[in-house]
Amino acid sequence: MSSPSAPTSPDPGSTPPAPPVPLAALLARRDLGLRLLTGSGDVPLHWVHTSEMADPYPYLLGGELLMTAGVQLTDPAHYVERVVEAGAAALGFGVTPVYDTVPAELVEACARRGLPLVEVPPRTPFTAVARALWRLMAEARLQELRRVTEAQQSLAAAAARPAPVPAVLGALASRLAGRAVLFGADGTESTAAGREVPPEAARALRELTGVLGPHPGGAPAKGPASASGDGGGWRLAAYALGGGDGLTLGVATERRDPGDHTIAGVAVVLLSLLTAPHRGADVTVRDGALVRLLLGAAPEDVAAALGPGPWTVVHARGGDGTPFAATALAAALGTPLMDAGTGTGMRTATGTPPDTGTGATDAEGAPGGTPAAAPSPVRLLLPASAPLTAQPGWTLGAAAPAHARDLPAADAEAARALRRAEASRTPLARHRPAGFAGLVDPAEAAAYARALLAPLAEPLTETLRVWLSLHGSWDRTAAALDVHRNTVRQRITRCTALLDRDLDDPDVRMELWFALRLG
Image (cartoon, rainbow, N blue to C red; front, side, top):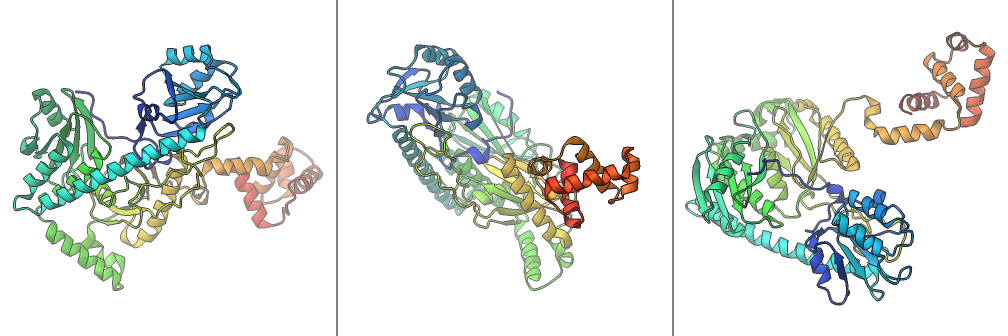
């Protein structure tokens, strides 16, 4: 068995809302006339990017088919090295208008590094390749959504049967063409359905569930809410149920297809509902508390009914585009308190125009590249004691723990944390209490400070810093710098002229003080 790990996913900001397409699918398009010169056609392609930069590394996200005509190709070996370092999936080389054939040095370099190299004939524009990949991805996405939708209907129908838990397990195993097992808190197999698996895979699946921790409401968590691994040649996944009794779902399949995680997530939600012993009473109490809030009760008056505080507010954006995505996220985080908003669909990746070159495409290889408006986030409320970890396919922003009366402020903190997570392309960002300065992205603040103070040489900058710190006192500034007070006046006057700012204005002084601290 391979080492179990919590599932991870590519950076949400760089992942298109469609499954990747193998290079072989593009090669099979006769109208494109592409020819594979080196490497494997099994590599997955996430998008197409065109660049004629001598070093395209800074403009690549990874997983793309990089298209070039070799306008600035002077060192093929170094070029391929940088493309591989950037994580590009394959290289497409147009043989016109610069080269009549693919350079032999480029072919050799790609072969050495295992980078698939595709020859693009003169009659095929780069945009045609990008459009073809986009259509293939759209078809794959449609097929995946159809499969997930059918699976959701099947699982929902199974949950309505007289013996719902075995029925849901059976429907899940059938849809994934594998085996689904419900494990008890002690790791013993409670109920199972589907295909028999080799003993080694069965043992590895049982061991994988051991790394999970129960969700909030049960014993303190000892591990992640989900994990994946391999054993006996089978793909394994385990999910902790949200009932708080330590139950886990184990899934074993011979391969892992797009949509499998979503289908399993729906089953986790249903099984969590079906196996939670006192959920009905808890829901009644909670819903009553929410009604009292709507009717004007103070938050602290109904906090006890909602559960012991403090709370952590989480904003999330992402998912896989299915109606159950937000519910599956709530189940994974172990909370029933969720506002789905309109954020259950995956945020469309915004395409950026290529730097230079032939056949411009957007970042997904689709024509146009018009950014789509980001959907409103999913908002969740978790007990502050609950573990919060990054979730596959989602970008999360978490506020600092707060009591009921402070939840509105915590909601704003979570929104800022989510924006920071998206800007930095990290799966999870937490609120960092740092006063007003903490509300500004440090990198953006530093860049603005450098631009603002750029006209000042070092003596002027230091004089301005000391002068502001001493509240504009000429004498104390002169003493601190060991210069004459007239020198201080001359320098501050010079700063006023270079910055074109009124240093008697308190707003200007405050802005400059922040710039001097952050620059």
